Length: 165
Image 1 (cartoon, rainbow, N blue to C red):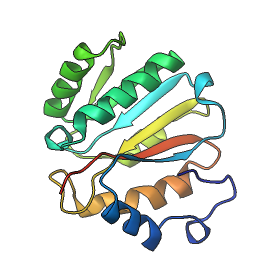
Image 2 (cartoon, one colour):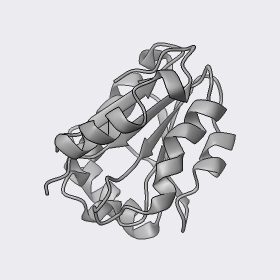
Image 3 (cartoon, rainbow, N blue to C red):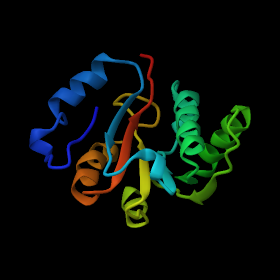
């Protein structure tokens, strides 16, 4: 799904329809808001919740992030717990892409800190979790509205990993 540049929360797919899609589809879902081509991105900042490595779609989203970083040639910064970062590094080692991410330790999922570090030519990837999944917390519900409000004319992807019920 994509977000238009003039979108507000009330005139986008977010809310009830997004909930229905997330509840009805187990596959990985990306919601993209981009003000420039992804090939011109200089830095990618990934924010992942605690326990993200325990989700069934973990390896798949790691592969997707590695591919985006490799194809864009962008620097990759990852903000997450140490356990999640170790699992991400193991996944990247299995990848054909030669990715060496920078680890920024974050004990709690802090989208606000990540947003403050985003420049116009950066991409923020917020890995979220579906309700009833292992890494879900109610605080994740506010991430998408927060990004829509605070990253206007900047680039972000909200990623909901594949989830088997």
